[in-house]
Image (cartoon, rainbow, N blue to C red; front, top):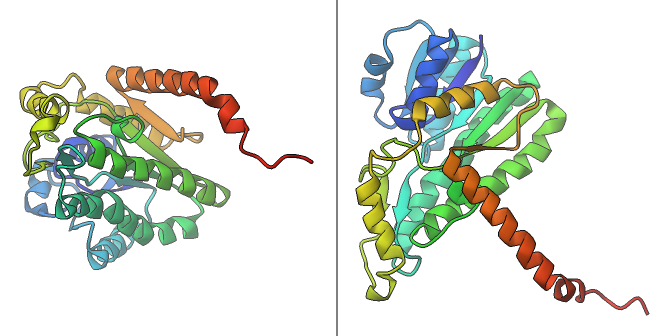
Length: 277
């Protein structure tokens, strides 16, 4: 039996992971900013512990981790799932809007990770799963700020992976493509209040896409959760877990573009060292 600690478990990937982990007999610490309904939606279970957690509050994170250890004796898998979106051109996004999405997606993830890692280090085992996005590997118009938070998650994951591997702890960033969750709802996806006409053909079109695509996305969150559960306890988990055909296509496309660009500019790049003489 594994013990899961999941942030943002009220809906989306977090809820599906929690539900499927409970179904297979694992213990789950399900956290959310408003946890009142979680116990009912996940059903009564001795293996379920519901905890209030705003990931930006270090005290709440530490209290939830303490409760998890007291109840289940340890933590095997941390799922950093809590997050929020911001849609708008970079120039349209205000300082306050940008800081709000960073507080949850980057600083909140770090806050929870710092609270859980002492447990995993004592155990010399465990797996940190950071829910990123294909937008953390390749992003585009309208998603620059949001994508930048997920790029940060990619970097944090790579660094943690190198630091924790000698201690027997695995770290993976999950890169979902477009899945049929509530992410495009206003409760998760915030839209920059300002609009600049010059961006109507780029970020402006993406605003329209988000409205039209909400709850019509091609990815199945239940299948994504099943894939995440499969990787979570694998002894040789990947550094990155891309999910969805759209994600795979975008990753392949970016890798090809980077290779082509590097080939074109390689001689210039290699010309910048000190001369051997």
